[in-house]
Length: 311
Image (cartoon, rainbow, N blue to C red; front, side, top):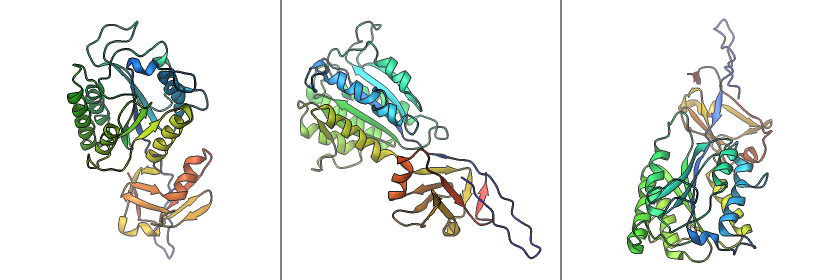
């Protein structure tokens, strides 16, 4: 991005053209994967639920992380009621974790290697342990939205086996995460988990009333539906927000010029651009979609002299 100061004549001091750095605000996505024994069921196009989720995430070229690892900071948490076979003993919930980062495919794939489902489903306890670390990420380094993507194939059992308390704890955990700025997206893998529970989790995880009847969760019964759910979620969370290395006078923002691949975008139009605040600029609508779909897209931004102040 080039922010240009357009100087005036008539003996007045000329503004100097400045090359100003910017960076996109990448989503920070923690994938929270149920590692209960039922994930071994072989009902996803001839493979286990666990295998289907694994391939949907890390398959070369087609997997979610392989496709988007440069544009999304992915992390992984696999959760179990006891340590997986071959791992040191651990109390419930036992977590296998990879912190969020760009270009994280290799680390996520290594974590999956040799790990197999075991035991019950301590969903609430696991969310309670995961979201605070996501919330605590440095705001300067980890710009962009923060979210959990929960993939589970059953009702939570908790660490103590009390199903009613486990459901309540799961709902409380996603609500607490949302209050801390972390949204939760919910995928029901297989038919077992009730629509009601998945709906309530998704509602609370996205700041809606628990009893809202809209289905914000995804129910997947095969590999195609799983891939579609993951694509829909990551498509929703990828934003075209850019952190400017400086500030723009919001009152004079409309004097700026933003072009995408040489085509000028309209200020505050649905498919144009706007300022999120004095140091963050958003490209919107179809322009954002075009920007996301092409690694070769070129975005240029300019403001008249005095409107942009470098940091």
